[in-house]
Image (cartoon, rainbow, N blue to C red; front, side, top):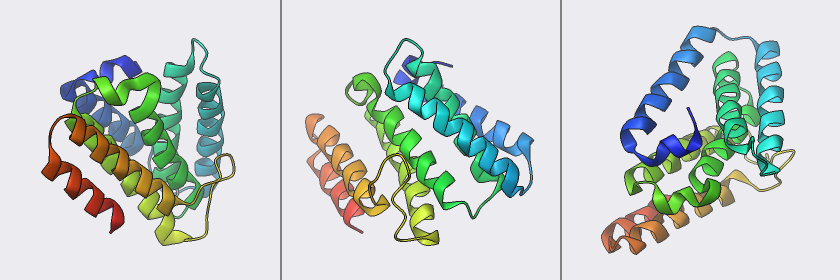
Length: 168
């Protein structure tokens, strides 16, 4: 699976099913294992941010580790925050937001929102260790960018709805 495979909604759905299958296979609550998975994911996220030739694969790996971390410990604020970061980065990676189907962009926005909202529900003051920005501000950005994309597609009603969701 490569980031460029996310250009179609069908491939996106297969990738999400694969991620969830891995999460289900990995199993039950284990905070120590969750922390290990989170640390691995953060290392891959840092590789991705260097934008080298391995960046796309690193982002894919980071998401798998963040998903695994959240499955091992449903109370790990940091893991949910970085899961949201991963989905956000996937949406924006190398201009993909502008070539990926708007449905795929919206799906990634919703996945990032779910993760950020979960992090907020656990600790409304958490801002991330690597990327210091409050999850509520991230949500505004996520939904605002989706609104922009919908406007580019000529969907004014969809853009307005995205802004309303982002503000709620």
